[in-house]
Amino acid sequence: MMGAKSFGGRLIIISGFPAPPGSLTQPPKQDKGEKLAQDVVLYMGPDLINGNGAYCGGCALFIRDLSHCAILSPAKVDEKKGVCGLYIPGVSTNSTKMKALATIPAKVAGYIEDGPTKCGICEYFLKKEHACQVVEGKIEAGGCCNRWEEED
Image (cartoon, rainbow, N blue to C red; front, top):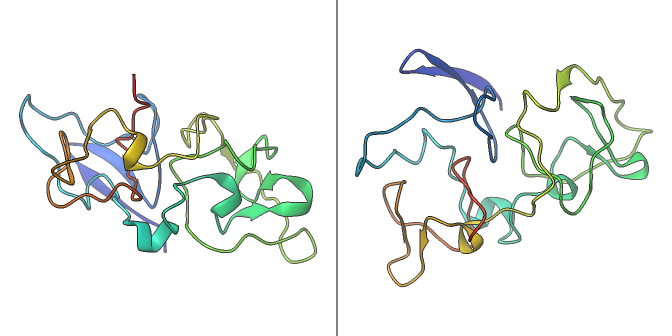
């Protein structure tokens, strides 16, 4: 289910991974040392994303036979490395069951080809503590959120 919330005057699309600066799905800035709540960054545990990380091929909006996203424009995406801030975990489909609407610019959705994304390969993940430097609570290596940054 998608919706929107306003945090600090910024519109946040509910459902997604990761979000480059300037995209609609980028979480609010935080003060140094402050951690964001899991719901603010849309943290999904490995049970929701099967521990494989977030990527187009694991999204309910992915059209397999065309390698298209049902909502992005341009619709062509990378099945294995593509991911955006509007990721919805689920079973992909084919073009006989879903047509591409191509209504949201890929840049606005935060589309990148750095996936799959997951906490275990994030710059902020603290492996020993099962925690994150920027998100509060217990964090699993197979989970992901829209604060994901590629490890250095």
